[in-house]
Length: 329
Image (cartoon, one colour):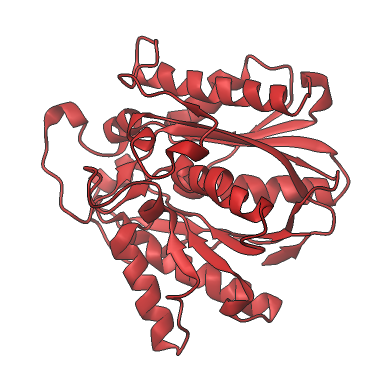
């Protein structure tokens, strides 16, 4: 299903990045850097992530000159169990809240839900947020870093940071023109480290349906960006579309390959986590769009929507991807 939107605009954004992201190629594009020991002055990694998200929302309100009373709704999600990062951060705001989850595709889900609310004229101003923290995610979904467990080259590295976006019916330079809701796909992979292989099938399915539903070709977009497939998942997407006679090498990339310096940082196949693609799109790419270096961008965040409980029961790992069209107007 692809929804077209007539009056949804991105008014402001705010990004916070962690220490590994601060050492990467996009450092100068982030609004704030937390580059200390990953605790950010808190007593646990979980509380550090809550702090990042809380600060991110507060700073967005400040730069957009909005008060709590001006915001109709916050939509947010993260990787912590029961959306703890979002739940605990947003208790500091007197704003209605919806918690959502699509794993690393969460921010895309939030943009589609938020855009639908704005376009239906039910709301005028709302915030979409997400966060992730490397140490929190590694503890919850894989072996904690402290265990020193070796990882294969094709594993990905969870990004640390937070991103918040103000959506409104107030016209601005960048408009959200459409969104395609993803389907749950399963590549029958059980390897928790192979996120690129797990999620590539969802990216392919959603991109194909998005283009088909809108009756457009891939070259309609100046850039197509998947969420966090890493370098191996990216190759799968390119190879698949090449088999259809569609060359994506000129206008496709993956956010997991952009956020970090894959040659010089210890991030394996690239970045992951719900904030990975959000940091790339709404710091670096949005600046390119404001300068009209890019005018049409398809954002396709991907997520492995698995439960550690089901993983330990030896089930396969399903995935999902959503697509959001961003255009300069």
